[in-house]
Amino acid sequence: MWALSGARLSDGSAADVVVDGERVARVGAGAAAGVPEVLDCSERLVLPAFVDGHVHLDKVFIRDELREHDGTLRGAIQAIHERKRRYSVEDVRARARAVIEESVRQGTTRLRSHVDVDTIGKLVPLEGVLAAAADCADIAEVQTIAFPQEGLLRDPGAHELMEAALELGAHVVGGMPHWEADEAAQREHVRLCFDLAQRFDRDVDMHVDETDDGGVRTLEMVADEALKRGYTGRVTAGHVCSLAAADEEYAKRVIDKCAQAGISIAANPVTNLVLQGRGDRGLIRRGTTRIAELRAAGVNVLFGQDCVKDGFYPFGRGSMVEVALISAHAAHLTTHDDIAYALRAITEAPAQAMRLSDYGLAPGMRADLTVMTSGSWEEALRLQLPPESVWFKGRLVAENSVTSVLYH
Ligand SMILES: [Zn+2]
Image: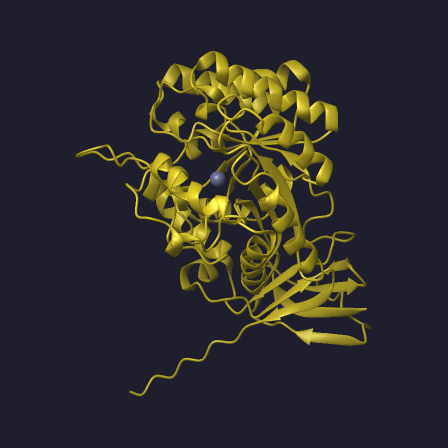
C-alpha cells in the first residue's frame, strides 16, 4: 500500500490518494495516515489517467510515405490505399506501439483504436495493432474497433473480413455509413453493423457523417437502429461533422434521439478543423459537431486524438491535454465550467463511451493516475506541460521532467 499525499484534485480540493495493489483504496484528507510509503504531491494535480476514446493506431506515422493530396477526407483515404497495400504486421505493430508509448508518457493509459478492415489491407492492420497492444499490456490498455474504412457495400468482401476481425479479437464493431453510394446503401450498412454487434455481443462505434454536407444524415439511421434494437448506452458516433451544417429542426430531433439512445459522440475537432470546410470561401465551416447543443441535451461528448501524423493530419503526439486545448478553441470552451467540461471530455466521457466500469479517482477504481506539476486543471491546460508521473494499475509507468532556465 502507498499514497500520494496533499494532492490537488480537479475540483480544487486537497486530498490524499491511497493505492492498494492495482486499485485506489481511499481518497480524502488525511487518508494517507499510517500508510508506509507516501509521495508528497503538494501543489500538484492528480487526475485519473486520460482516455483517448478515438484514435487510428494502424495509420499513425505514415504521412511522409504518402503522395501529396488535396487535404480532404476523400483525398487522404485514397492517398493511403497504396501504403495500406504494403502494410506488414510488424510495420503496423511498430508504429502503433510508438504512439501507445507516447500516449502513456503523456498521461493516457486507455485507448480505443479504430483499425481498418477492408479488402486492401485485409486483417494485417488489426493483427499489427493487436500485437502492439499486447506489447504494451504492462503500461496501457487498448480496445480495438473493426472499422470498414472503405465501406461494406462499396467494398465486397469487407463484411466477411469484419466477421473474421471480430473472431480475431477486435472488441467493437465500427462502421462508416456515409461512405456508401446512396441512402439505401447507408441504411443497409448501419443494419449490417448492428447485426454483427448483436451476433457477437459487441458495442458499436462508427464514423458518422464526417462531411460538411448538412444533407448527409446517417446519424439518425444509427440512432433509430440503436433505439429499435434496445442498444441503449452501447453506441458511439464519431466525428458527426455534418450535424453542424444541418437545419435546426433535424439537429434538434436527432440530438434528442441520441440522448434517448444513450449514444456517445466522439468529437474530433483536432483533425476536423483541418480536414473539413476546404470547399468553403469566406465563412469557412469549422468541421466540428454541435458540441454546445449536444452538451445541453445531456449527450455524452468525448474528444479524441483521432490521428497522429497520418494522411489526414500532420500533427498529433498522443497528448490528450493538447487535444483538450485545441478542442476548447474549436468549441468556444472558455468559462470555468467549460474548461472543466474539456477535462471531462478526455476522462470520464470516453470512459463512459467505452463502458469502463473501474474508471475514476474513487475507492475501488483502477489506480491509473496522472500527476501534473500544475496545481489546477486550468493551469495544466494552459501550460501544456507533460505529466510528472503516470501510473497504470498502481505501477509507475512514466515520468517526465522539464527544465527551463532564464538568464535575466
Ligand atoms: Zn476517426
